[in-house]
Figure 1 (spheres, rainbow, N blue to C red):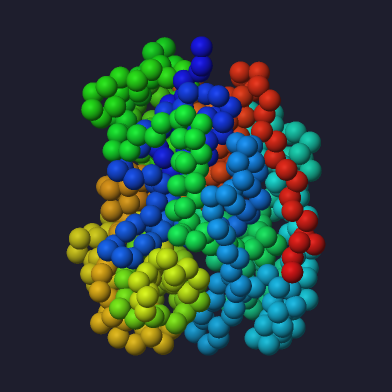
Figure 2 (figure 1 turned 120 degrees about the horizontal axis):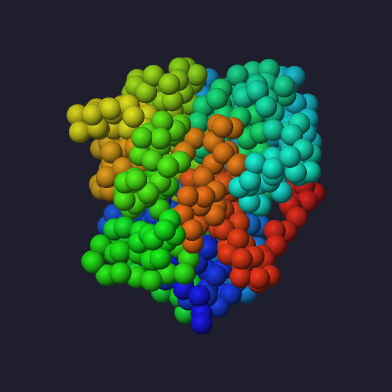
Length: 508
């Protein structure tokens, strides 16, 4: 009899797992509480304007190619990808950098703005390439037993884990100017972390972009989850939207099925959880079942920051590159306010996506749709967003006007939606509004992170940012491959291989 797989959540991790398992002949049913697919990777429609709700960067596209290939599909039959150059623009108080993966152009800019630092770029590329080579096998395979910490691949990677060194410390080996260091460490925000706290091994985040590029799918990054959903359906899988799960049906610490919000009980041989990890563990499981991840213990874990979002449709063209990061004048203070004191900054850093300069499908002709993100504390901060949302929104827009030179920005907004950390928690079911999930301290990585084959319940598997290898779209997709391989291995089927990293020679 065909094995029945139930997937909770139609985010990228859940849909990647569903796509792979459906292509292997499993009976796959995906249950999504929202009326749309994609989770944090969904599209947001405001009239004629289309926005990505969450992720907007697509890198490491070879992972996407491999997963579609494993499902006997060509991703380019589903997506049109445009490489961005520059990858993103960085605006500091006194200078602007256009970050590119063209080494000659990148070193020319470094020498222009930070004399004497351009040789550090070559060393960064060479040494981080080695770091990526030895860390990749750890990110591509399960880590759920303590003895695996002493396996040859981990021992080989040990020097590159940069134990005891922060991301800021590691980049300080290559560059002497703080602004240049920030240009290669701000990616720690993809994990919701400070570069002074983020483990040094995550130097691979900026390397990934400089080595493999940054891409935009026409229609937005939401098209990736739509493409995976299409493949699921092509293989006979079913995706139910507006059909949430109320409770996991558990007997003798083994999941037997799901109780849906509508009262229906659904049998499943295996359950894959793509919902926010801490939210699921505190809401879908009866008290007393778990011991390692009780509500009390989950509250003591370390979590990422959150994000304050403005999705704004403008009545005119906004002349800024596809991706722009505006740095706070005192970046370290801003980061400490977000992650340590958990207070609202008066000088926020801001990320702006102006995707219309690349993709005319996202806004009407002559108009721009702006995705505006300011990292802010998660809801452990107890910030009153009902009271502070308008004031902070105005501060963000005023900061943008001042630092990008676009005057009277508010006057040109014809449609707008604001999303606060409280919205992330209440509307998207993200624990404490921690948008990037559990923190990525070494104490919560690899074997110390919730396991892909969940250790507390039988027939239960995890995908997404709350399990190994962690947050960020490429690693979330890897979590799906790891989990699917666990199921295939249990069923004595051939596993899905991970290909070698693309050669650095592929750089322009």
